[in-house]
Amino acid sequence: TRFEGEIAASHSRHIGPVGLSLYASRMTDDSYRENDWKKRTNLALRSDISLSEEDVLSVTANYMDQYRGAWLYWKDAVHALEPPDAYLGETIDSKRFYSTAIYTHTLSPSAVLTTRALWFRNHWIDALGERVDDSKSDMLWGEAQLSWTATDRHIFTFGVEGDYDHVRASLFGLHHGGGGAMYAQDEIKLLEPLELTLGARYDVQSLDSVETNSQFNPKAALVYTAAAGTAI
Image (cartoon, rainbow, N blue to C red; front, side):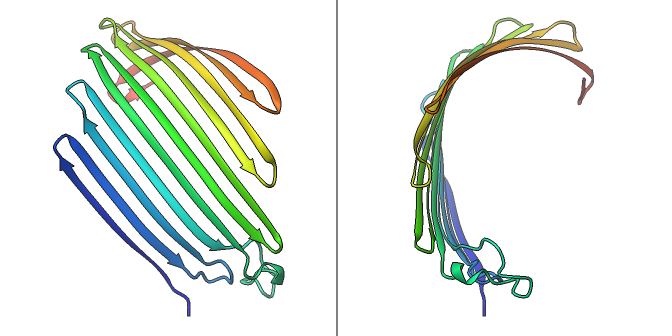
């Protein structure tokens, strides 16, 4: 006898200027294939906080813990639902987490500053026979963006962003890398159906095993709004 099921619970509420949402679930699946079972737990949180009339902070977080059998391929055509004997009882344990934050500050009726940040972490352990592989990785990313409506015909966007990656694994060792970028663009309303966008972006990327690369990318786009909901 094999079973599959999931239970979940959620709750949302406001406490003054703070909005809060929580979610949790637990799933188990015995699977129809041998050694393909899995058990997974998910936890999630979201909060929106009105710090003032000009400042809003949004935070999200998610955590997943999964433990499963290592099904890679079938034993043979006759035993299509069974793995090779060497893989019976082998497991994979993985944990993933990410968190984001978005802070929005209204500088004036025509200017808004938005700051975003992200942290993602992944950790897995793959136990196949006498060999155990362990890998941990982290990714950090951030961006600051200013949107400014200078006139009825010009909307400017300026921004900078950066990222950093770090991996520690028994399979391929220790590696890290990162990069940054800056960009700017102007959305110009020419005539009522025409809009021109001009912009540029400069990127720099560095990895520990290769030399640093950089690239400049210009941008030009013309949009013709033929009718409501139709643009070329």
